[in-house]
Image (cartoon, rainbow, N blue to C red):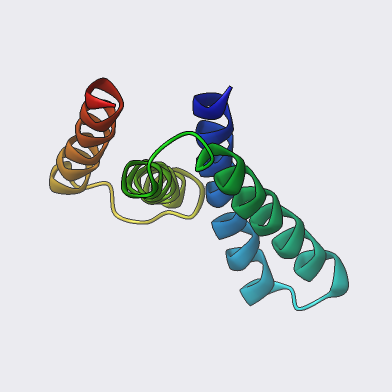
Length: 104
């Protein structure tokens, strides 16, 4: 349950970054609502996960999912550079996240 909450928190973090991008383009009430709901859900789910997973592990995995997911979506949705180096280092983030899960 706590690992599912942590993964969901990371995915909500990615959605929150998309919402942030939307706020920069469209400064309207629905964009801000989308931002508040997505980041609120992310922090709430992270809180649930941290009741059973150590703070350092939970935070590292949450930020890893957020960083990797946001970078990948930026490359594919917003036309950011798709250099092999970026993909390589995203892979390292994901391997590190898996390592933390394996060690916990």
